[in-house]
Every structure is written in structure tokens, then in C-alpha cells.
Image 1 (cartoon, rainbow, N blue to C red):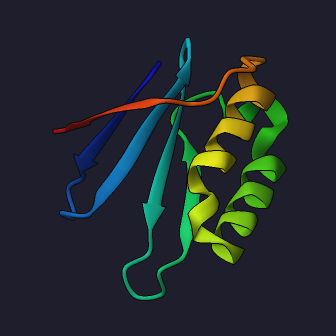
Image 2 (cartoon, rainbow, N blue to C red; image 1 turned 90 degrees about the vertical axis):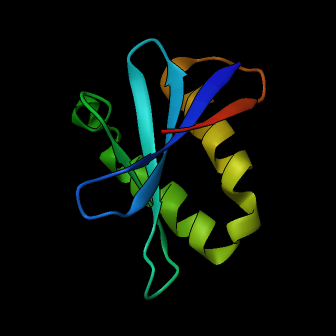
Length: 93
């Protein structure tokens, strides 16, 4: 099971932080003006050559926003090799 936290940054915008495994965390944000979903890493996740995969998953999520959980599950399998579905426990900070 993963921990998903909603955190507010300095600009008072909120982002969903999804802990995939070990030190791998992805931040999901929604642009308030356009409604576009974007994914970014917190640490070495993007530096490991997975940046294009983030872009591809973000594009698929923007085509079909209901695929957010499925996209995060695919990201978890690709990044961590964990085959079971992503289950989140939500916490607000």
C-alpha cells in the first residue's frame, strides 16, 4: 500500500504526492487555468532517464483524466517493478 499525501506549497497550490516505493515519489499537479495534469519527481526519479516516461504518462492522463490511478500503477510497475495495483491511503498536510 502506498501513502498519498496532499500538500500545499508556498504559493498555496496543492499537489498529490504519491509514494511509489523506497525513495521514489511522484508529484501530481493540476494546472488550475487549463486543468492539465502533470507529473514530476522528487529526487532521482527523473534523473534516472525516466523523464520521457513521465511526459508520456502525463499526456495519456490528459487525454483521459479518469486513467490517473491506472497511469500511476503503470508508473509504479515501470519504476519499481512492483506488479500489484496501487492502493492509496490519503493524508492531507
